[in-house]
Length: 340
Image (cartoon, rainbow, N blue to C red; front, side):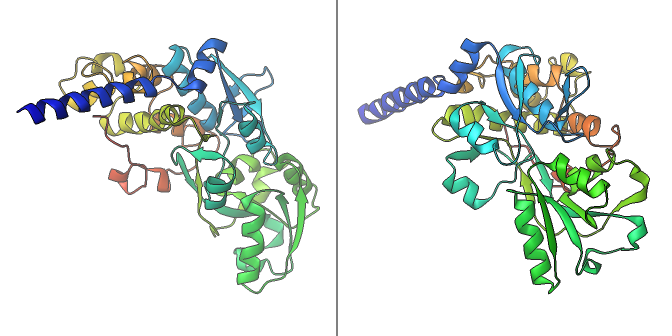
């Protein structure tokens, strides 16, 4: 019995020690002291992250940062958005210019192991594709032998493009640009035959062309592009907050908890819903947040499906099908981890 009591005491001390470590995220403290989250986003990608003419940011990646702000401040507006290019996004994160990178960024081994950053969770499963003008009379990417292709430099997109043409024994003229906007404008002015980026980006980019209906997205998906928010290495507690923001939104969709019904769901007898919304147990403490952190996210931003449909899905101009981003219960890959 004495040994059991000693073991229990040690376990209790360890638990308290872990609790203290969890609640002492230097990034979280900096965000709280500053009074706002600084989020690195795209700034030029319709549906994912860009400001309107009045400077109001909207998009799927924007919603994610607003969800983090809601969890911390109970206010989704306490976010400063910093537009970042593919070339400077990691430098901005590494240097501390931004607290989190939420900018259609692919999780790869080299980025995960050499840049001093950690990827929190795949919040969008994507893949690279091609857009061409209908007048080119091309129905497959395999018909692009000898084509000139506009692409943003310094991206996995540029590398995948070269790999695809090489593996299919096709010749390629790559026309690179520093930003996606420059690459798209070059394509729109017929400086190249095709334009390539992540498939999700193609639909948003097409809306920005002079004559969107004159262009088609080809059927081939030539790569795996698991997109994930990223944080600096060395602050595991902050990474936990970013990671569980995503899973809370997915869990909410699985459980049928929405912006409109979340208040009523506080009285739900379902133990999973009660844990998610902070009615039972104390899961906010381990994040250094209030116990209603997930309730705040859902109340102000909504669940994963609501954000998807509003920004890039059927309720948006892009009208992208859920596809791989459907819930695992509906044939997709989005799978919320249990809060317990």
